[in-house]
Length: 267
Image 1 (cartoon, helix red, strand yellow):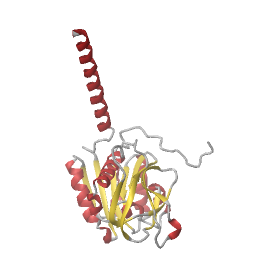
Image 2: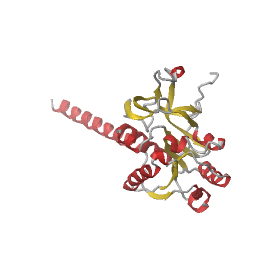
Image 3: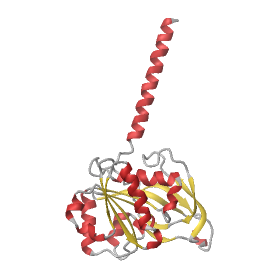
Image 4: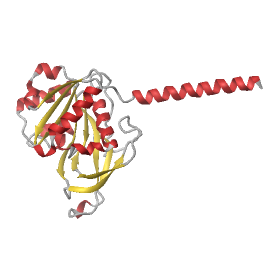
């Protein structure tokens, strides 16, 4: 009996250590943003309240230990000293125009390994005259059928990714549902489907709502939620955004992931 009890004790210790190790691995799979240098750039159309979004996210970043620089001018993209020493750019700049010099500064930084993250029109409804910019993002807003609608469903597409692990399908209320043109080579994290409205031809259409990708060495994360900063009062939406930001901040510190899985492959 004593021998049996001893073996049981050894077994339970093994199970405890294994589960503890697994839990720590899960926690560590979403990187920390502590000590990272983050540049927040905001502006453009005021209807999206870019200043409110920037304040909310910057407060969270500072609470996480990030070093935050905030600019309300795209001119910051031409400042080489800042761009060369930035780990992550978070942009919320709807519409507007970006100059050749500003774009080149942004493009070069990302290709070298600076991450880029953002949401809604602040990233995917920006600088329509620049196709090269849209190439970086991997998608472009084209419509929000029905405008501000009562609700829509967000479906987690890849529940094994560290950004989405543990997040269940959820509902967004009283906000816009983005219909987008999307690069089919993005790694899609979450989707949404459209019901019949005045745009009857899109009934049943499934559109990515969040994805990640690379541009050169830089990680790019996008989430189409965020028409109103209050959208992030929905816990799952806030989790997607903040985890995506953390993932994008690691371009310079972790090996490049192979995210390309073409859906139109011959195989």
